[in-house]
Image (cartoon, rainbow, N blue to C red; front, side, top):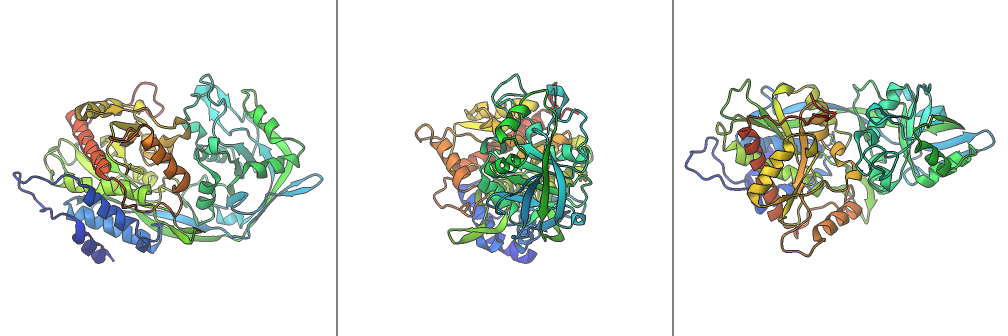
Length: 535
């Protein structure tokens, strides 16, 4: 399979000598090069690139072949790959969930349509029967003066939690419209585990989650991935639609509106409900191995002490799932084929500049991002170079495909000196730095730069903005909204020959300039004072 991937690369990769002569001009990243990568990565042949599948293995081989062709050195000793063990939990389509009250039992509805649940721990056996406690938003945030638990004992309970954060747009409560990491649902799972809860059921709203129910359904009705080495796994995790949750709490004699109103007050305390969760399923457990793929380009400094700039773009997607309009392959052309194409094209460009830059550049294609950043978490837990040497992570995610723009977006840049790096690059290119789009959706916490930030390495998600050249105002935003509502995490995320990849090539140039700017600063892009990620 590895040999086949190398042969495929040879069909469309430009020929690059392993040690290019200084006088030879390195071809810029082109739309044709990017399109060739995306077409292959989003082809049905790869079956949606789900972790542990044939498509996953072929994708890893393709990336490794590209790194080899581009002259990158293996990042993991003699290897380009790092194992990422994953526990896959395949749901039982006959999974049932009910809420038993004192007088009656309220079924949660149909699995997939009204609720989704998973049983991360095999010892749970697919059966959970436990008391329900309403835990508000499930947040502990000392810096914001907020504690939904206040010392309450929730050991062995199932927590019913609201998605998002309290306060809405009120800047006096948390950061107002801007979601903090406390509103991230995975953070809430970590808090619940520390508190000894048996499980968590989230009440879904589009506003709280940042996406519609179809995204939840498509992610939880297929094999769900967990880190088998995580000691904080719960016995039950899942989501309820708002109507399903409302029906459940009515069985306890309260309304969802009353609970939500209580949860938005600082004095809120966990509220035991006169309910028991009764969940039954026959999930299938399987431990598989995916892999991070990484190669490094050495700069002009010492191989043991030079600063390292990480450029990342995850390689996984959702695989095969619920059929929509006769199509069950979730190709992931934009998520994350477009970003991975930029990564591979940049690897070619930077690979031809070995020994030139004052920083080393590590190109990383993490596994299992869609499963909760499992690949990047493994990478920072077992880094091939010390974290202290990593100057920054420039992460690429769902890179724009709608043409060149007048602006650039750097999600998370406000936390570190990467903000001034991006501003400098933008000025050089005659662009403006646009504000973070939809800050209430917490994009910073939803891709691999967040794993680096939590490990103390400044990171951003960099992309073009929505002010597209030569188009009416609002065109870029309309493209993005159409993608998020109709294609994101759906079979329709396929390669479109109409895409204008000159903009994607523009993004590649911006990332290369950002690498140069970080190098010019000696690899010093510190966290800003007050950042929660500051070392």
